[in-house]
Every structure is written in structure tokens, then in C-alpha cells.
Picture 1 (cartoon, rainbow, N blue to C red):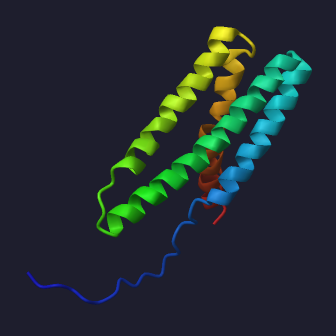
Picture 2: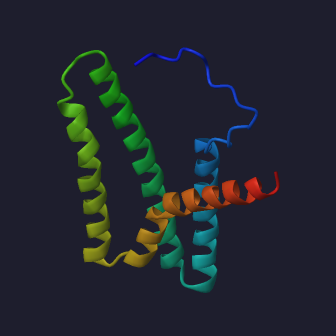
Length: 138
């Protein structure tokens, strides 16, 4: 087999990359909107539950980002992964304990906390929709 060293040249433009910054902005908008709507149409505890879940979603995002960065940096430098891999998995335990705390105590509606935690998922779906519908205009 021969190796083709010629670069791939195409006239087509590449699709826009998903913007992490835009996803974080969408998360913030969704959390704020959900919290305000939950307070207005439900009760203040429901709005606060969405806000707390949203804060947990942001914490989860940055914890995962930093854990993965540390894990890949260690592996790239040739070190054994060890503790950073455990840190990556411990975030699930920590988030589970926080959600379990709200469930057991009943201090906040668990549905609201989980909706707030889902803000990242909703933001990714909205980002995908933006990408799909902006592709139709081109």
C-alpha cells in the first residue's frame, strides 16, 4: 500500500463547530428562564430547585473538563493515570449524594433539581437545532 501525502482539497465549506462558549451561554439562559418561570408559575421552591440544579450542572461541566484535562495530560506525559481517573468518576458519586440529599430531606422538589441538572443536555439539543436550521439557510 502506498501513502497518499496529498492534502485533501475540497470546495465545500466545513460545518461550523459546536461552540462550548455558546453552549454555556445557552445553559445560563435556560437556567435563568427556568428558574424565573418555575417561581412565577409554580412556587419559589421549584424555581430555587432549578437554580440549584443549574449550579450543579455548571459545577459538573467544569469538574469534568478539569478532570479530563488532568487525565489526558498525565497520560500524554507517560505517567500512570491513577488518581485523576478516580476524580473523574467521583463526580458522579458527589452529584448523586447531593441529589439524594434533596430527595431525602424534601427541601427542594427533586424534579426541579433534575431539570436544572439537565440544562447542559437541553443546551446541546438547542445548539444542534441551531446547527441544523442554520444549515438550511446556506
